[in-house]
Length: 96
Image 1 (tube, one colour):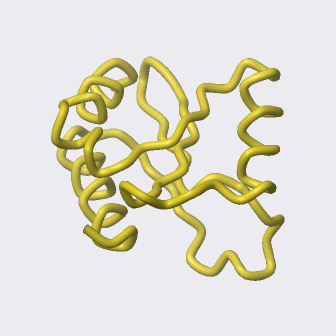
Image 2 (cartoon, one colour):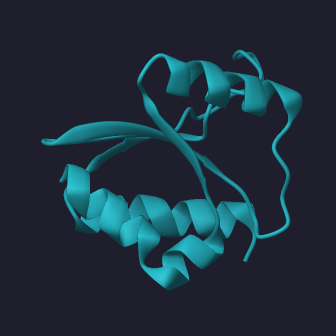
């Protein structure tokens, strides 16, 4: 599964579960490393970086993740296996 296909699946799942999801349309002029998705439900907010099974975080992505977690923000990486295992759905339902 490509990262784009994975992202489209996650966005569709957010819509299905009535969870708001934001992805910048054009991120080339944005700060490097900012997470792919901001996701907000009635019971929580999270930022998620999406990667293929073998995709690696850049140094900037790692730095943002560390800083966001230190600030108390729910930040993590989702991969296609998280969809298959049910982790992704559980996390979305938790904030819905």
